Length: 88
Image (cartoon, rainbow, N blue to C red; front, side):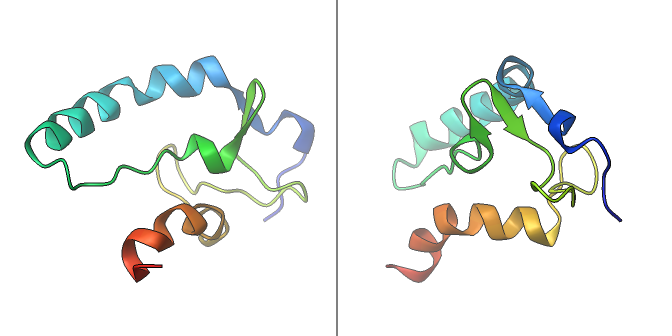
């Protein structure tokens, strides 16, 4: 369904950053042992200025729970992932 109050469907970037600490620590440990691993930063797709979107401008959600993307969220992230998967 559509989310109402679209203008409020974003997290402050400070909250997003705080939620990413554990994942970034784990990814840094992996990269230390495997420097060929490319880590994608979702903030590049979802954050603008001081806000990180959790819904599209039309109100459709980008996440189906606190951590997992909907198909729409995946489509926004795909341009960051595609070069690693497709080799382009």
